Length: 556
Ligand SMILES: [Zn+2]
Image 1: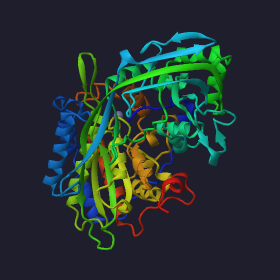
Image 2 (image 1 turned 180 degrees about the vertical axis):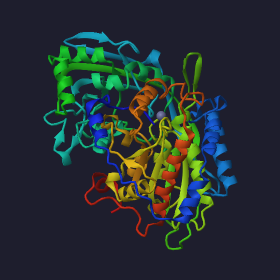
Image 3 (image 1 turned 180 degrees about the horizontal axis):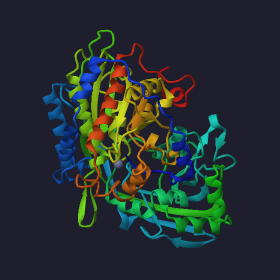
Image 4 (image 1 turned 90 degrees about the horizontal axis):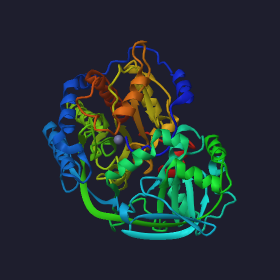
């Protein structure tokens, strides 16, 4: 999964949600020979072998734009070819080239100065602030008064506006990572950095300062953000060479740490604790900070490219085979970064060699199906997920099949094969008729379905399904749930420990303990069944009536 952009700890909310797990009646499903035979094709050994190759040190963490990623891409294409799937990338190949712009902050030349009542304070990079690379300009400057706009969210449909009563025109806006306490996937949507940035620009802002606060500091500590500057930041480039999610109106950015944030609030006469409490309570909060910021950003820019890999299985029903069920899994990981215990390769075995390896097992299983599913199936391994869902966003903008033909997206990322699979959390399913499909598949496999246990982690916007959602394609991201009928096995604890020690660390490799490939195979069979059901239904999936995402992005 990608960056942790905003959030809170698991806490009580998550536990309460878990308690509400919906147990699906364990009843044998109706027989379906084709699906049963295909599910039997999926082997734990196949998943393990795929992961072992992709997570090997030789591939150096599969960073987007690197040779290691290129090798991984060649591997996926050659496997698809060997399985017998048709190429569905560009020019009769399995590849879709994605042009990227890569940026590293030039720390020595970047500066942030705060001016209050004629007194100047120069901040120190990595000590009390960092800055993100600017994908559009190597050098940019801004000097303007700073206004605090809370979460920086404007959501008229939910009668919420952080900008109410504040004039941000020509100002630098300061905001926190959080979002108001809306329903899980809406909250996730509104924590998105792109959504906040676009909103700031719409209100006339000329610069943006992100402020740390206690909740987000726990989830994505400032020190880790600083560490992650070792990895390049990327944007994809459109046909005119413009970076995605880039607003030239914003001429400066900075991220302040918790201490600097507290000081900023105190000096403007607003006790930090009060502001943090208001944010936590989800109350719109904004005020003039009474300070001017002078920001100078410098970025080392380079253009690179990496491919998405696309393969196709043609459907068996003439009237439906021009519609596609799109499976996605990101192939990239972080690459080479700051060493830990002498290891600087971020292998990304679970994140997401697991999903890519499962994608291959699904391809193998679907290819052997007699008859083939009625709709066509597209298998897409994408680049640049870790830098902001970039490869999938590019694919969803410029699909190699008709855009309208994408009937649904089923995404796989970070299969936590660390405990026996008893239930599934289907992120995003509740927005469309995919909910019914998921219920059917779960029932048939005697798996439970559970609600989002960690709304604060905004998982719905943190993997590639969100790119498809934004292009109007109903999508779902099913992940293993956290239910355990064995009191000795505590999935939440296993997960928390994994997140703290291995998630986005060099230790997410094939030597980590506890990988249960049989459970991964079970998850893969569930994913197969979901796609199979979507492919064979008479009606393609549709957004629920009046759904937030359907109204905003769906086909009209
Ligand atoms: Zn990740």
